[in-house]
Length: 507
Ligand code: PHE
Image 1 (tube, protein in one colour):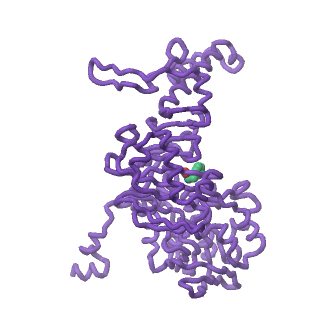
Image 2 (tube, rainbow, N blue to C red):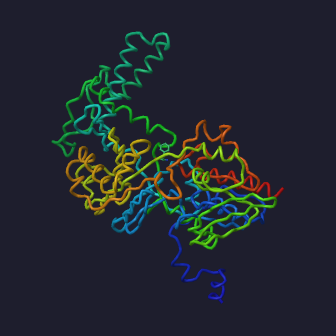
Image 3 (tube, rainbow, N blue to C red):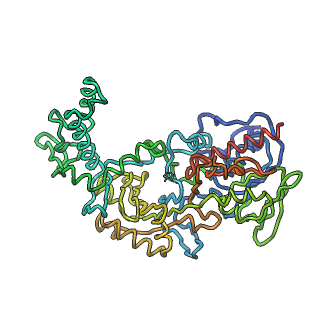
């Protein structure tokens, strides 16, 4: 009887038990559509927004079909592992040679705690771990400012905070703030500055244990030797290291941050499973979206064959720059709005090393080194500590600098990134390299953008036609949110659209 019940899905089977994810979502999501809808919906684009539309509408009873132009779902939520291949629009073909367990999140890679992405991870059972976005032991290196060696983040921070505190204390003492502060305020400000800058009773900064040690403290007899010499205030400000500290104050980038265990594509993979593979057609390139009196007709090609699918509604969740080149009868205002979504550029390179020398030699376990080099940042992996190998992000660039790398061949990108990284990390940055893989979103077929620049924000009048349905066609994507370039933007945009669509169907 148990076996029969198992076959009917009423009791766990041995097979089901072996497929069971180790993590169980403690409760269902906070987003539910009330009432059942029975409409047919075609979702164009199988990234986070499109998958979420199909997932949420599916829960409410809709019959959804997702058309995805690429061979895989996930859109920009791409995790590259050993054996994965890409061909970009320049014709560069790469196959990743990463070893088992190593990966590069070529797209999104960090999740703030407040974003709804966290709720979907909980609901879908995607295990999370901390993503280290800031590390006191990582480096700052401003070559253009004349730095000849990197400085630890903690050292730079001690010096900048120390001198700022000293100068503010001096201004307070000199009476410069008397018009703004009462005597009590000034006392309290000085108390704060003493601890903020570690400037002591003298109210002057002359170094601090916060800078770090040349010899670390240990057993009795080894008090440690502080790192010196302490640069002057003028030298510290000239080095420009202070510019990096506001990063961690940002609402989007403040620690703690998180990542899915095993790669960012665990999120679209879980969504894809939840939607159901039979509802998703990959390799389906949409040619035309036609709004009709009764619904929509979507023409697409798949495997060289032209096909059409009719439905009651369409949700266009593909990149706006691609939709702008796709046939449609949605009107000139929609077209103008689509063309106003300006595609941005970004690129990353993953460098796999034979040893985790940044951990053993530099004592850097995750986090980011910030530079003024054209590689932008260097990310150390937040997973696999003390393992044998690891993948460093050797550049992560947006804007003009990322295009400079994009136009080079994968080998040239690697050479350039490594030559720069050597300046900060020494010879092992070159000698221990095992494999690399570089990815540029502007040159990725069917995406052609890292994200979009929306002049005036998503609610600017020009984008109005994308924020409401055009007949039976709705638009979704992170570009239509206040969190573009975040999965959160795609999730929230998708929720807004399914809510509007469902309300209409019920009415
Ligand atoms: N979300 C991406 C990141 O964290 C892109 C981004 C960068 C978005 C900075 C906003 C600000 O890298």
